[in-house]
Image: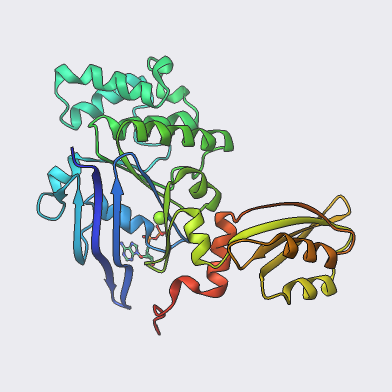
Length: 328
Ligand SMILES: Nc1ncnc2c1ncn2[C@@H]1O[C@H](COP(=O)(O)OP(=O)(O)O)[C@@H](O)[C@H]1O
Ligand SMILES: [Mg+2]
């Protein structure tokens, strides 16, 4: 079995209109393996949905090539589609008065799953998404989170190699959004490669093994959170609790060459200060020195940067975009 689920090679997509043309995806390369969760992260308009639609063969690339489960998507779109499961989500798309099981049997039939295999398939995907015990309930009685699970089950009935999740947690309550993590894990066990788009950094950090950060159709950084933080020049973050954090303290801490950023917030009358270091190992001496500069400070601890911190540092330094600036 091929371990590669999805590849993009120099893929671009241009949309043309009367007012000119817009490059939605610019020269994208990506590889997704089976059992891997790849997150596409970026602001609105960055090109995430366009990427997903091309992977689903709903949209043709303007140039470049895409393979799904080793199949050339432009040459054999039907075969490629048989290997993908697209989850767009939302409340619609099901027969509300039919049960979960009846809905899935119907969609399995539409996808060409033969009668003999259909029952076993439907049973398996219901288990995967954790709806086995509700399979005989009508969809109208389902919560949003359960409907989302059913969407995923629907995308799985043809046993796809690639599962495409476009902004899966939009409109979900926090609890259901948390469930999504478990669900993504079970898809991994199913042997699928998962391409997930989101504009929530915390979600991307939680769910994905690896990330592609998009901006205006281009990848500005990629890798694990740690790798992205390294590209951003952000290595570790030390948190302090201090009596006050004023302009003077800020200037003193920021002036250090080994400090990348210093940010603070106040809670319960005390200042909480996060200092990010610009070198791989914040030395004990440096941590202590900053502690002395701050008034009445205690060191809470040192941790690695979160994706959000790395992302903000990346945008502020432009580290990920060197040589890629265009003049449009
Ligand atoms: N069908 C279309 N026609 C024209 N422009 C489009 C079309 N679809 C997307 N775009 C443009 O392509 C860019 C990327 O959009 P999209 O892939 O939807 O971004 P994202 O999902 O990251 O928010 C945007 O500037 C958007 O306006
Ligand atoms: Mg989108």
